[in-house]
Image 1 (tube, helix red, strand yellow):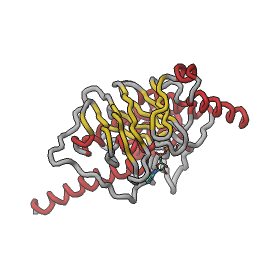
Image 2 (cartoon, helix red, strand yellow; image 1 turned 90 degrees about the horizontal axis):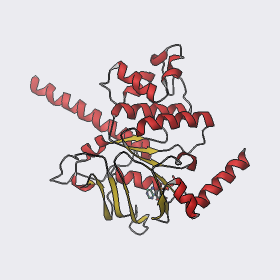
Image 3 (spheres, rainbow, N blue to C red; image 1 turned 90 degrees about the vertical axis):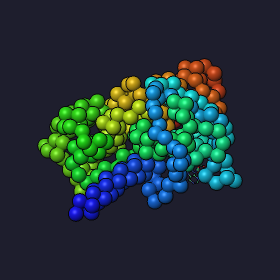
Image 4 (cartoon, rainbow, N blue to C red; image 1 turned 45 degrees about the horizontal axis):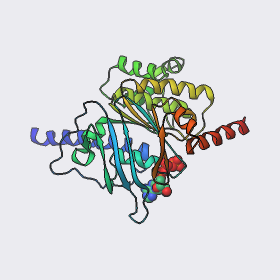
Length: 297
Ligand code: ATP
């Protein structure tokens, strides 16, 4: 009997882990139907994160070998830094996120975390190291508590509340008649885009990974919501390395470094102030976005 139930229990555990990582990846990449093509190297060891430094070294990649998307991209992120990747639509910003999660292998160059090539470590250890805040957080038809605790199902109630507080969700939840027991999702309370993203931030805070990949929501948020999200993101950035795939420039101003991607290469990099002073691509994008903001106001 023991012999039969043990493997079944294991299977349940494995299933939950696979499902969790698929949902995480699917949330970020919208690729749930696509099988992962990557497997661990026979001698792969666990990724050892000592500081959380990330480097892209001359990275080349194309989904189709005939059509290169990244053509020798290099940048590095120091431990605890926030790096924002900006650039025109289709420049390859989200592709950089997919490569960091090793959804695909690079065709040239290397990506390293604390000096370890992603191809030399197990995918499980890589996925446990990187937390993802997706553009559009998937909500389950369950309670708000379940949806936040999903980041670390064994978390205590106090830990879940603390994550909600840091993500600026607690006051909103406390005002609901059923509080954390409120049902959300298709059959429950519908959350706004900003609230959903804060659930994603709370989940990631609970998971407590050393590196966070943030795929910023493309939709415009109202100013108050955006400010709340910025405050929540600051909580995520404390003591962690953060890579933001930025679709709106307004959110990158505070980044330690901005990488401007264009035509598969790094066109410029620096701080917001440096790049504005250079008067190059970033300054042009910034001016165009500011003009658009004025026209819409
Ligand atoms: P946006 O700001 O519009 O989200 P992006 O800079 O994030 O754009 P990517 O999503 O990285 O751009 O896409 C870069 C290029 O790769 C695009 O030309 C896109 O068509 C192509 N691409 C993206 N995903 C795939 C895929 N799964 N298979 C084939 N080509 C893809």
